[in-house]
Length: 546
Image (cartoon, rainbow, N blue to C red; front, side, top):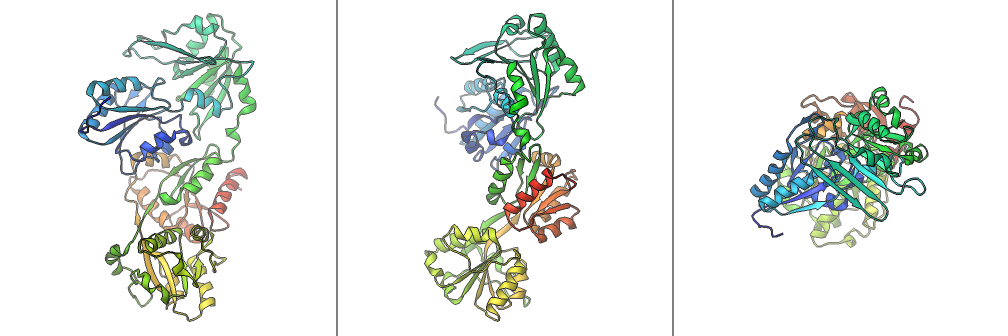
């Protein structure tokens, strides 16, 4: 299809069933650069957090009994964005796969009619992924050689849709027709009752009692194993076992609610043995990580691998400060108790210093970016001693091939200052590489030292509504710095949205800030991410009241 350069391009992206780890690489790459993201209610906060932070976020989420935005309006909205935003990337983010009962075909047809270029980015469908997360394979040798995906939910205003797909090892069949009464489903129950494979019903909880009774009437064994899986692949996933004849009463007794899928067949029994996800130590926990975006990936990966859903919510943004950027900062940065102004970055003067002290990974990265941009390399550090505030910063230095000479046991600014006091005494040739918000702890302990401000820290200005909603349902907040605590407390007070008061903190300074703002604190034994993750796991596995 030819695309006019005067139009934007629309991507119909499948977000998967909930776990952001199931989003495709292609989908993630588009979301990271999207100018507009039009998303549904079933798209998880974890996936939304991967979107370009500057994107216009449009919630068109549809509830089971109330369409926030009608499908016809969504179709027109996509066309509108494409026509009014030349060259823009418009992402239509849909739960599961856009072409599996996702009405993506209708949206694509509307785009074609308007002459708008589009691309379909398939997603992992809940019909397969959700049972897998419950330990139920949809097919299994000797039990089920086919599986069938059926919609259990129909609307009277939807047009007739019928089709089937068959391959050598699986069969997916579905039918959907206009219907005046929700329970007068036009499914071919006689054929479904004879299917020897696995039956998977999407969007059918409200009608499942009726569906189960009709299948039994058409000859399906009442003892057929059945599982309802709520909120699959999310922290709140729950599996409820039943049989075909007890389906209706089980839904009522266990209060099974949407979103949920229903899976029928012998493979359901395997879930009693293969349910792997519920055994992960952080399974069922939603954690908000407030670390700066470019630093959060490490802890996010660790917590996710342990079963947690992580909502990345950076509280600060960092910006490298090249020489041209420093002039506006100098007047506001004290250099000691004598209120001296911070020295400008001047790599020609590096020869004047014997010790370079780094107090954060941001400082390390910004220093080397500026060093290389100025035409120098690591050889200018020959003969100099390098000090690090802690192990995380020390590890970052190793990435540049440089080992640290001094690392305090107490990984704080005070700990570093006291260590350097012993090493240098009254020495003035110490250079501190810090950010614009660094306090004067080191300068008070080392009054003759010089400070270069190599990066700027800016607080995040606001939280989008979808992120506030995610935070409100989180189990705990993870803080890696005092500044993150301060800004989170400021932002969360706007609108007074309730949220968990439990916090996991790295280091005593972060802990003190959290306590000041009324948080219950659990603090890592060491000021490292490994220690923090270990403490989080211990808290939940040893008992939350331990």
